[in-house]
Amino acid sequence: MKRNRAFVYSAPILVVIFGFISGAWPQEKAEDWFIKGNTLSRQSRFEEAVEAYKRSIENNPNATVAHFNLGLAYKNLNQLEEAATAFKKTVELEPGNLDARYSLGNTYNHLNRWEDAIAQLNIVVHRRRDDAEAHGNLGWAYYNFRKGPTFKYLVVINLTKAVELFESKNQLRAADATRKILE
Image (tube, rainbow, N blue to C red; front, side, top):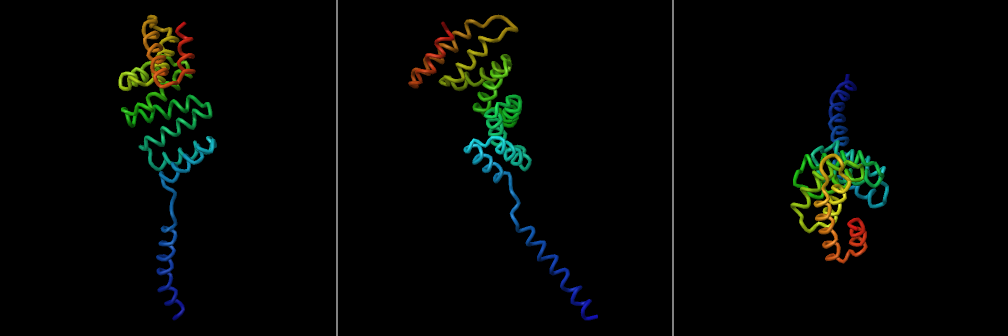
């Protein structure tokens, strides 16, 4: 009987102790996975970074920076559809994020989705008028767009602006490459 009482009294104490111990072990949080993804990306281990960013997003689906970095990792793996999806989610969560809009527009250019690229890049160049890369990408999208009327005037305007901005930033190779498109 004494043995049973000892068990009855000690069993709840053990449950409480083990409950605290298991609860005290750190669960990996969204931020931990995000930091791990960043570390892996810096090491060019993009497949692993993708998995880390996905785990971060599972724990915090509204973390725009995790979606954005997921897009960058996919882009480095040349998985452009997945990159576009991640960048698009970033834009949905934070419509004013011009870096996400630029990255989405640039990715759409790589996917030959000219109209989608134009939509994103127009927003960027109207809010960041000194962004040479955005002007260059927008000019390229207009240059390749074939569905509607020709946009030769807009191609020339945006590529000329890109050349000027590249030169003002002493990015002469980019300026020369962009100038060749104009010729």
